[in-house]
Image 1 (spheres, rainbow, N blue to C red):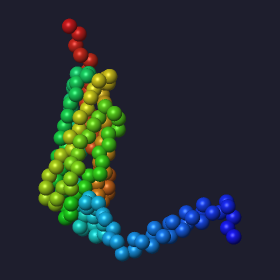
Image 2: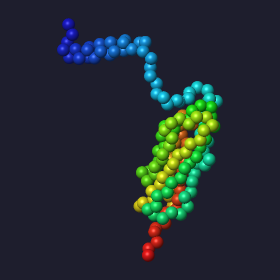
Image 3: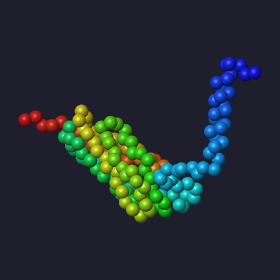
Image 4: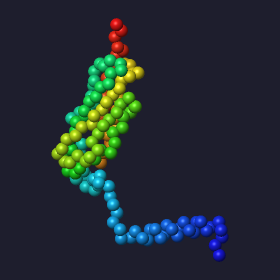
Length: 149
């Protein structure tokens, strides 16, 4: 006889065994995102025109943007899974669809200088299915106070 305290555990194990045994021959659905593995010669390669941009002097409160252009010079689809900025004043927009070999794309970076002053550098960490899987983009600027009239 099963003790009452073990009964819920027994039922849970029975449910797990039954649910696993019903899926033996069903195909596994995969995401449409292609991620290359295996031979490094077959991986995508992200080639940026430049990885650093200097906005020069801007006026405090100004919003500026720049497009980091790139080409997939590898042999399989390039997938960008994220592009995260080092602070909330910087936002990165990147292609959500795979970039085929030989095709180009861009990562648009927008910087809001509100409340900032002086020399400023921000980074954007781009995560891809390349090897290595992260790249760092950098923006910099010199923020000057608005002139008083």
